[in-house]
Amino acid sequence: MNYCTHKHIARARMVFITIALLSAMLTLSTSDIYADQGDELPANRFTTEEQRLIDAGFPDVKTYWNREDFNAARDAILAASEKDPLTLPRLTDSPDGLFSRLVIELDSMTAAIAEGRDEPEMTEDIQKYIGVLEISTNEITLPIFGAYSHLQDGTVIVYEREMLSLLPFIVRQMGLMAHVMQEIVASGVELPDEAKSSFSSYRKLSGDVTNAAIGLIVYPGLKHDDLRSKLIIDCEDALKEMLLVLAADRREEAVAKLNLLRTSDLTQEEHASIKAIIGEE
Image (cartoon, rainbow, N blue to C red; front, side, top):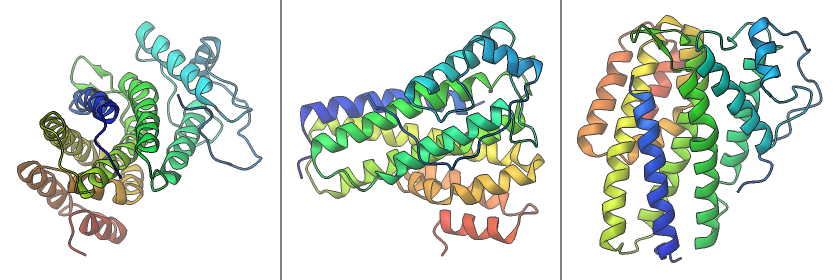
């Protein structure tokens, strides 16, 4: 398989720009992409903040989303955040809220993309798959996560539980990208100097992203046992993929953070996942 076409290298450079943006945030076309979720949808009971979002164009919660719906959700959230970042819809115990609906759809989208991870066999297929990841991460997940990353007075994380609920989708999508990059390297093709430079940049940026994500798992993760535990366990495979592409020093940093996390009061399942992530299985 020839992975080294000029188009593929150009596409890879676009990915690195995407990851650079993601790194900055974490440090503090496809058509319809969604999986079958069943027939039951949440009831419509909206708070004042949620109604404001609906008025701004948040998509219909009675239907499952396509790309246009994701764009509408993103635009409504960004508009609300720009107007008043303290009035975004919150995560609640009820499945009826808009944030819960957003999480359901992001999970469905990410799962659908993951299902196609091992299908691409031709260079054109890999270009298309990377394009799907670019769109999902750069145009949908990142901007929404960025809106919820607001720091009041520059220091206080306002949306701790919301950020921890959105972080798994960034990690899972980044894990998919790491997998693709490993497959390219494993192909054994001698890369041109330009591509080697891009891959070197990718490894550095991936290290920034991975360590920043683990930093959020530690804090505010340790304050929210339920979300932290789900995040570690659900993202075990993705974090494992991300660690595999890191430069030695960045991997050591990530492993040190995970080992520090292991000294906390974690569940047995969390300990097992961390062992798997750092390769102690």
